[in-house]
Length: 182
Length: 253
Image 1 (cartoon, rainbow over the protein chains, first blue to last red):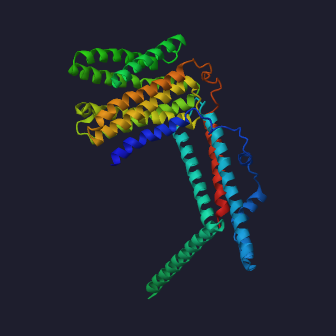
Image 2: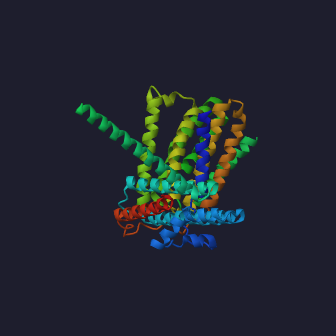
Image 3: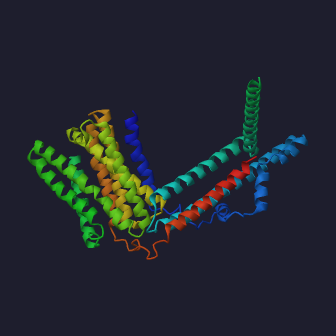
């Protein structure tokens, strides 16, 4: 059964690839689509932007909204914040796609291309796209704060484990000291 | 009667394809592809003669010419490599490495799974042997087309048509042979009509693509050679790391 799937699957995949042959959609920079146009502009960088991005995912605003005890406000806040977070992730993905587009344009004509390095870059790009996809999925499912909550929780757990390990080590040293003294 | 009509149509279309290739001056541009078509055209006449002479002779002629056309057909990849990637030395380098890895992997797999190595292939039934060899072609073409799509290589109408038609041809044969070898001989009758019909479709695709010579041939390699790859890769790597760092800092507590 697996053999049939492989023997049928590879030709089907090849047919899909062949349908893309000659298309320049992956390098095309001219599109009238406004949304894509927005995404293609390089995202602004700097400390203010970094602070804004931190704020999108931080729980400060959410805590404030929670304190208002207004279900409507909570709903509006969550919807808007999710939209902004998704926009930011899409933009980050678009920026990186542009970086890779420029890279491919240069690399394809390069005389001294290094195959291993090129494969490494492609894998790094794939990893980044997967991360972006996972971020989009998590934001859609649990909202933009879930990630920070998860990261905070993981950090708390790791810190508490660290504290426990330190305490255990200290008590062992103390016990060894007592034994040595006795 | 129907199979004879399909057969004669295929011979006619191959003849037209060769004629158009000669008229448009496409032979020197794509020598491997037109050599392949010329061989198939000649083989069709041999098969036709054998078919009218003797059943056993036809079987022998069919499989020997089929095997040879498969080997000669593999040279079509050389046209893709030689003409299509001429202006893209970086992509050509990737293609060489990828094909080397693909063939090394297939060879290793063959040696590992068959006790007497690749020579076991010659003891397989004709359909199974063809299926194995077509699969090798399919994987190699898959790797080449993937690179062409990734680097947005512009092949031009003629070469794109050749590659597309040959790819469709390989895919259809694999699908048909898989069905025949796995689902029994009762599909043999359907296959005997389906394979020539799909070949007619492929010939039509080639005719459409090669009717007129493409004037927009891929340019010759840029003398600047696309710049130094190390510098390009280092800057891309740095930009990717910055983007990843931004992504991480947003969700970091």
